[in-house]
Amino acid sequence: MWPFFTLNRPLVWLALAALAGASVLPLLSLRLAALVVIAIGMVDGWRQIRLEHQRRRLGEQALELSQDGVMITNAANRIVIVNPAFTQITGYTLEEIRGLDPSALSSGRHDKAFYDRYWQTLKTTGRWEGEIWNERKHGDQYPQWLRVQACHDHKGRVSHYVGLFTDITRHKSREQDLRRIGFEDPLTGLPNRRRLHDLLASRLRHLRAGEGLDLALIDIDAFKTVNDSLGVDSGDRLLARFGQRLAAQVAGGIVGRLGGDEFMVIRTTTFDDHDKWIATLRQHLSEPFEIDESSLHLGLTIGSCRAPEDGADPNVLFQRLESALYSAKRHGRNHDRRFRPSLEVEGDRQLTILNELRQALAQGSQLELYYQTQHRLDDGEMVGMEALLRWHHPDHGLILPSEFIPLAERHGLMPVLGNWVIDQAVAQLATWRGQGLDVLPVWVNLSALQLIQGDLESHLISTLKQYRVPARLLGLELTESVLLDERAGDISRRLEALRREGLQIAIDDFGTGYSSMAYLKRLPVDKLKLDREFIRALPHDHADAAITSAVLAMAHGLNLDVIAEGVETAEQRDFLLARGCRHVQGYLYARPQPAGEVENRLRQAVANVYS
Ligand code: C2E
Ligand code: MG
Ligand code: MG
Image 1: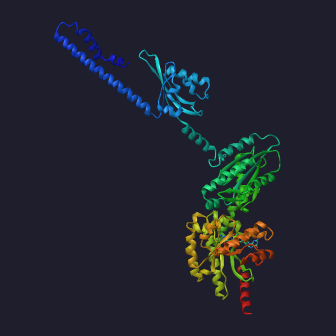
Image 2: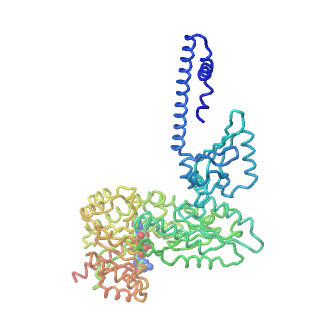
Image 3: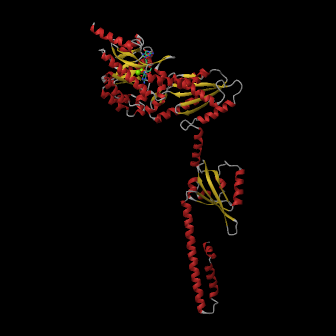
């Protein structure tokens, strides 16, 4: 058929005319001229054929190389040509579908009206472009972006339809992801804050007579230490599992993640058993979470409220849940608190306290260090003391550190407050030494913020120098969370440097964090302070007895001293003594006391030696 292409060339026509006329031309010269014209016409025709051939080959190559799927159908809409990308996307080869109507590839997702519009557009405009879902050979459906163009013959009739399409599955799923990100927490797949807000609003609108909503905001205690000790991936896994378990527990309710380690639960109910509901949630979450061969028991702090009693507006309810949670947190870990109107006043109270604390620090007269003595277990001999901060508030009386230290930490006051404690403790040691008393090491507590924000090391060294107190008389107590706080930099190196100066280091509240034994082994510390949580129920509680015994055995192996905190009874003392514990601190021996009273005990100790 290809010689046809050559017929639209004038030279070819001329050659044909010359060919017809050559035999009847009278003159030889004219015949020769006709032959030349014929030869030129043939050469031109031949060149055209070659060019056409080349164009075809290029067209075929382009089809083969195209990343877009190409399908050409004839005027009757039967498939005549497909390219390799088509086969790759759909799974069909040309042999399998030649002669078929393209509707054989359809997914069934679009209705008749869709195809009617498609044909109408194609017929009237000669083209169609849009998203269409088709089915691959092995059955799965996928979206494609299709452009179809009608091709016409020289009489203007449609001869073919050329369709070009791309597989937009990946693009679509990203679009879906984007849509989901707006409303869904990507880690747990649970509704995010925005979505929770909408869901809550919807539940509130659909409350029927006698129905109410129970709402709880759950915060995982010390979650940061999980991240720090097991790694962020494990932390993520824990959050995902936590969300799953919570969602399984409140079937028919709503569970979402507000961010970080905060989850929200909502249920519609006709019962008035809010506290029982919270207890059930707690119980369900108290089972350990198995993450990376670690069995994690989580402490939870919960703030809760009810609608419509505590508010019928989502914003108000969110705020009230947060103030309930905040109040629960202030009462220590693993607490829950239901919203009360008085809690809102508490926020203001906090601010007032903070300002008063600033003033107290500036004046110094309302703050005082109490000292709690530490003893050797076998003979009761005093071996040291811990400095514990007290605030004598002119209106509220004695305020304990658990009330104001978190406030100082949150508002940037901790380095100053911590330095004040160090100054006082070292000055007190200097005074006692000046009085010729046989002084014992004083241990001060350090907040993470002192290691992060202040210039702790130089303050310690300069204060000891200023008061001429030997560094061995000062001990530093750091909790596991302080040790694991990465904001403090290379903590091992910093502690090692302090020990080289002569200071002693203890891990406070040992056992409440997540530090692993391997980590402990590498840390330059002198002492573990076994948290009083484990001591409280001794010797009757089997688990606590086992933990205490294990810690003592392990510490012995690592050549670490252990001091048990919160020893209140003789039974506890005897149990510890029998397990090889050497030091104790607790009400059984002494409560924290003002310096004057401890001084009397120091004098008595000296007097006893000389009597
Ligand atoms: P901590 O360092 O673990 O201090 C021991 C706490 O246990 C003290 O509470 C002490 O009074 C209490 N305690 C001691 N023996 C017993 C006992 O036999 N039974 C009971 N039930 N309790 C006992 P306190 O003084 O209220 O201090 C609480 C926490 O506040 C301290 O825990 C420490 O973490 C922090 N803290 C205290 N003073 C300072 C300070 O100067 N700086 C920093 N950063 N934190 C401090
Ligand atoms: Mg302490
Ligand atoms: Mg402690």
